Length: 197
Image (spheres, rainbow, N blue to C red):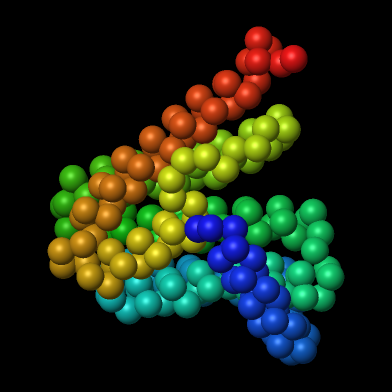
């Protein structure tokens, strides 16, 4: 996404954040509400209702943007808030993958169990690789499919599960793990002492 589009979206989200802030909800409260909604969406999918679960997942994941918007609009951003948001994001994503694992295991679809497990591992490690790199003072926004893109792709796979869910899961299994490798190679290059002046 181009930087100009990101700035425009961020500006609109701050405006939305100001409106939500008037309700008295804090950014951290929105993060936790989003977690509960994502668990609810995962439960819907675990019950076998993919379309409804996909729609619920999109709605619940909107809280990923709203908590940051409220924090910026009310000037209440904090390091703990950023930490909480990152941890909850991992739970949100894992909950949906676990729900899919349950469904596919019950149906005896071992190929999709494998695809879902690989996608879950890759998705968690994409975020971990970035966090670990930043802990080493290396900017690591390289590779494909950040969390917002993954959410949209997973939701689309659920909503059109009849023909799209299996390719989405195998695609995520591949791309997320390739991204982890890209990030590892990037960090290795950045930390190579021979590159320093």
